[in-house]
Picture (cartoon, rainbow, N blue to C red):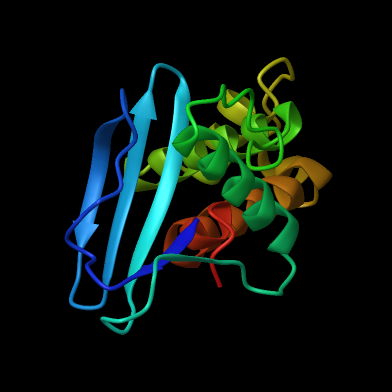
Length: 165
């Protein structure tokens, strides 16, 4: 949720919301606030002093998610219930894939070889393959693709999780 405001230091925290994470920069103030299980993500950007506070919705592939976030923010400012954030929440499949990719990256960081990652995380119910069978297997190719995806997620993909470009 992008909010253009003359004073980025004054956070429009809603009653009952507590800040979880904050990052303050020269031109932006990012904040994640929580009230129970509900989360609001705010990005405050500096606007001209005479301008009123404005919600900014960029017209890109994430416009629908940003519009839903703006609606949730507006409901919260009026004291109405937020309800579940289905647009911004990843599906069950996407959550499990992201968790798998992060587990794979943790394994890579710990120095676990790809074969052990394959049969420990990706194919846990399958018996490990050895030698030439492993080298020519689809399991190896699939595991190497997942390793590449995990590295890509860690090096450049975190912002994509939040639909920022």
